[in-house]
Length: 309
Image 1 (cartoon, rainbow, N blue to C red):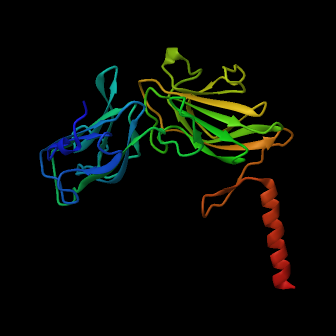
Image 2 (cartoon, rainbow, N blue to C red):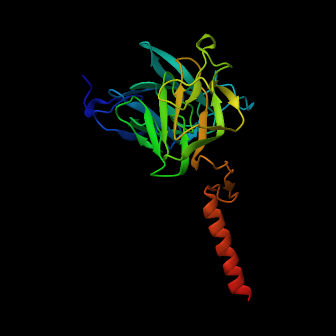
């Protein structure tokens, strides 16, 4: 049975967090934002329920680092992350120095952190991290289908374009995770996907024999041999459906991780050709529909005529 909220803190350096007590909060290194003391050794354990995953977002991170500027975290103050695989703890990452880490997500309802702060200095304020027990895998777009472990649907009736990403983006995707993205267009539409970032651990042809994570595509609910599997580090690329339904499947195993993927989706008429979105370098935004581009251009021309004539 889960411990009550009043018993979470066993000592200043041993903390347990249960989703039974609260679904989100923050925790810090000892004495934060003042420097942590030398020879600090802390454990932070997280216990969720059912489909819940633990997601950590770093708000501040500043550990004592070696004077030689080495990037090796093995003999310096460091924070280690562990997940549970087949009932055993396995280290998945180690952080040190002053670079703020990307978000972390567990592969199940449990996660453990170990902080080793051997050294200290007046600048070593440590870290502040927010935690959340989530069921949406850190995927913020689309509509989640609760009857699946991890599935999201995108309908052209709701939006003709948008973005989707791997679990926990912009952090590395969690291990032993499978997510599916369903795209439903109108009767005369097709689906165009533009992957702007792609880093999925594996080697072609992304099969089980090479222990590869992968992304695959299908025009049907079942498998579709037309596309093959995608893995590894790839430059931006495009994939297009043959009809108004498209399924994207992502699968990670229990071994190595990758940064994941980000993609733009567009619902187009079957007869239309894809036109790359126009990016605003100042804002980073993109304009999708050609009709909107023409409307904006016409409006600007009208204003110029009004101002200068």
